[in-house]
Amino acid sequence: MFGAGVRAFLCVEPVDMRKSIDGLSQLVGPVFSADAFGGQVFVFVSRRRDKVKLLWWDRHGFWLAYKRLERGRFPKPDEIARGALSSAELMAYLEGIDLNRVRRLSAVRASRVA
Image 1 (cartoon, rainbow, N blue to C red):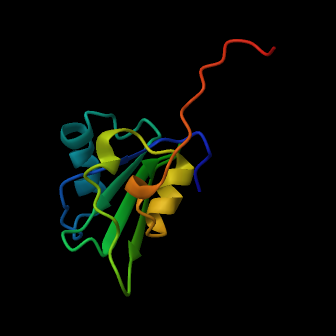
Image 2: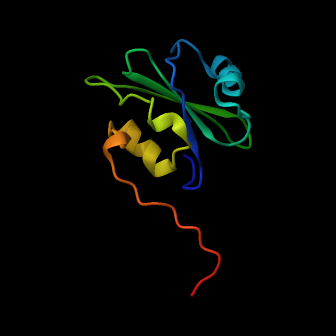
Image 3: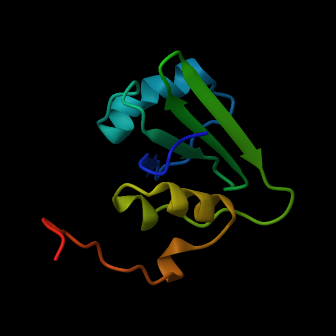
């Protein structure tokens, strides 16, 4: 649905899952200090952490994806939400993997090929 270079932002505070595209897009500015039309993925989690909604803009309009777990809960977003998630980290989060317990490789800043 979205490319590997897309960044995802996770909302720390629980969100009312009755909100749809318009309601969630209005939260993007105040919650994330971002533009809802910027192409990033914005992730909203329910109070019980058993539901999640993803909102993102493509060239023609908004997408809204919704996942409800039949058992279990998504990991707490507190620590994870400090920065942007890669698309791989977002997929891991949606699979229920607690990214706080995962050791990540540090980013490499390269300016030329040796």
